[in-house]
Image (cartoon, helix red, strand yellow):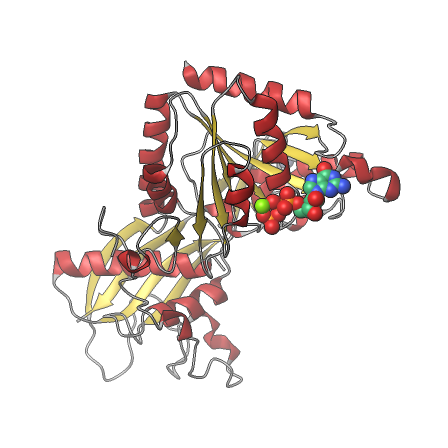
Length: 113
Length: 289
Ligand SMILES: Nc1nc2c(ncn2[C@@H]2O[C@H](COP(=O)(O)OP(=O)(O)OP(=O)(O)O)[C@@H](O)[C@H]2O)c(=O)[nH]1
Ligand SMILES: [Mg+2]
Ligand SMILES: [Zn+2]
């Protein structure tokens, strides 16, 4: 379950932001998770809840902004949506498709007090 | 707290380290007991995107509960893996400076990694210095198997952790008698999912697929096969006893990663060893510059 380490990484970013910015409580966190990032959003939310107990982010709402997988077809040159890295181009059926988006895992912003 | 760099290390243990030197900042001793205790499972499945059920429905970004003053917004815009990637960069710089060729070996449990490492070290004896970092959740059995060959090895136990990360590897490097111009083989925790996301600073990920595992593994676990430069199709001595379709396994791997190289190997029969050693020799020569 690498979602546990990912959740710890999120908490670290929050704590660093808190020491820069001086907030003491996090109400909401928005995290961007790409479809092709290898992270299971439900598992990540669960782990975030576990690792933030006793921290400034305890009880924070964890909002996942899902980012679709995107690719560029080598064959027809068009953009195509990808559910998985090995999906075929939706326009012409060619494989492989070059992955151009959807691998990100980013903390976007926080609502804090 | 890690005394060297101030980072929390969870329940990771590196051989030869004071077990109390690496207490975690957030999890504390009881961290893993923190299993979700409030209701995820109250039938409100729409809460799955929340860390826990607040009882409010999904709110679009920047909205807030009615009657409650809105909190202050703080922009972060940071990659969650940035920390790991920074440690990986440090490891990679160290490897480059010292002419070290580092490989990250990933696979399901029991694919034959340690056996292959032992055979590789024996074949390279006297020709190429080799060192090994062994990752397992528990025991130092694998590091002991490597040390029996005379090569330096250090065990990292990840506890409940399912993968090595670049920070653990950086610490293991401090403890490892790693000669310049070495081949460094890092045997990751047996797991085809999690190690894919964590760069350790290696030159290549090498994925080992044993023929007893089924030819569709590459599309069941595409991230790992997409991240690897080389696939070793291992335990090929067993092919006469199995219905495993080699061509189909390779086709599945290439569907996920068109550029992946493939070598058929067996530690038992020695098949493919020459080709594997030649692949290593090319990479090691490039790393020495
Ligand atoms: N037939 C056959 N068996 C092998 C081969 N390589 C390893 N084995 C056997 O497979 C089993 C697992 O081998 P290991 O080398 O411990 O595998 P591993 O990938 O290091 O295992 P973990 O570290 O536990 O994930 C042992 O019983 C080995 O004897 C091979 O080439 N052919
Ligand atoms: Mg092993
Ligand atoms: Zn196309």
